[in-house]
Image (cartoon, rainbow, N blue to C red):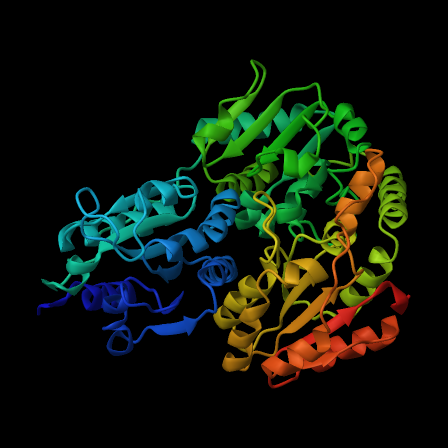
Length: 528
């Protein structure tokens, strides 16, 4: 059955498992909307294309399935690039479908015209391609979906000329078979087990790419006697309070001393990047077994290291099966009491560096349901909380780690809440970051989302102020006049409250989860 290509794409997405699309309709991309209702796709109306991109990102992180956003030619694509850049940095599967002009070589002065739309999106996506006919559009969509499930899941952008979107097209082909992610070979699993059991001071570093093996992490630590760290993205993969766990304190300078004690590091699904460590290197001087699905991450291994191209979770599960067949559980190689003392010292450092954050974070943690999923923004509160807040389960705190985009938390949390109806979802952000994407509060109200929006309001760019002081620069341009956030929230139709104590904060959070719409909760240092 022939339909306009835009309608065929809607039916194709639905047949491939997509159920929700985030975007803003415009005169150039309306053909993408022709078939959405008939196909059974849900469309969430954002207030800005950047918000639509962040919502798709949040939806993808919450479900593990691709998030899809629809964009309009030119400025719509550019508005979304920040969000796509965040998805690229954090390995999030987002598919951006954008309209584009039919011809730009000979014509000038067209609406939304830019020099090279495809190339602009290519700077923040794994790839960015133009589909000038239906067959190419279908092939690119299937290519993107297949790569999301078989390789590092970074965003892809497909640009569709306006006339092509409206032209009659045959139905898309049946869905192709999809490849699985690469896995370690039997020899590599055996070599890894041999090395870990031979080590006297093995140290696991779990990254966000290891979440697929979370169920066997307690077994691995018990079987090997190893200690562990997690990156911020992998928090929750080790159960809270585990005696062999150093936590998510890799950014503490003293963690380099701990790493230097190891005689084998097993880095699973982590880049060990600047935003993981806040220094150039982990600090160890021993062989490393490094497991990653991205071959680029394995090119910097040293001559004593063992690079393994494969899914980290699959390797962890294979190890948990293989080790008991070889030996009994090992006694702890690291002193649990020393680990506990080290963690306590690092927690005290965070308290000293960020007054009020630890106490507030721990109050929220005590009131937070175990299955709550949290999205945070670039704010001092999140910087401190992500170090000290142990999660009861993995994959339930999402932060713009690499690209570091202000304004991420609110729209991403909306995408996450849409993906998890009936389950608790939270946004945590600062007073400045909130103002980047504040209009998306209207979307949350329209959807009736019971979304607590926790705003840490210290009335300044606190992190920048502290950096200026540390650099002996007089604090400049770090204080701006804030609006009345409570009045703004109410103007959008949301609830709003300002607790005056930590106990009142906990009560407000519980009440917000039961509300019929979002609740903005203003947090200030005066609560303490």
